[in-house]
Amino acid sequence: MISLRQKGFTLLELLIAITIFAIGLLTVAGMQMAAIQANMDADSNSVATAIAQGVLEDILSRSADDDIFGDTVADEPFALNAAAMANIRGGDRYEASYDITLNSPAPGMAQVRVRVDGGRTMTVQTRSVSLTGFKRL
Image (tube, helix red, strand yellow):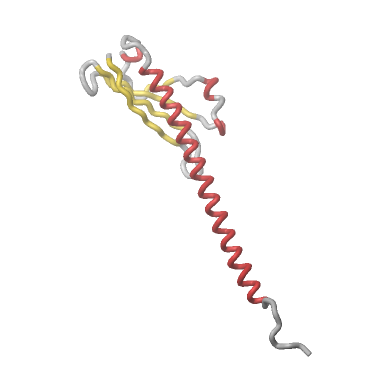
């Protein structure tokens, strides 16, 4: 004789449990994609910032009578070291440019603005980083 109180789960209970489990897994997968995207954005920003710092340091380390401070062309391209650029993770391309404004913010000083464009992210094609420094002339 079969009792009416059998132990175990019904098919409906199993389907509901599997559905809840699947929704949880999909949520975790979505969070993983968001984390990968944020990591990729941060890496691209870090590389662009490091390049901009290197260019700014290169310009600021030159003597005050260097020809670079006599030319005040806006967005002048800066030739990046090809050997150093070959070691960038992901093979992204970066371009650097600079502006030099003489007698700014005070007489006898130069404002140097460096801009680096490039990199790749999942949400944005290129990343732009700008740094500003000052040189006493």
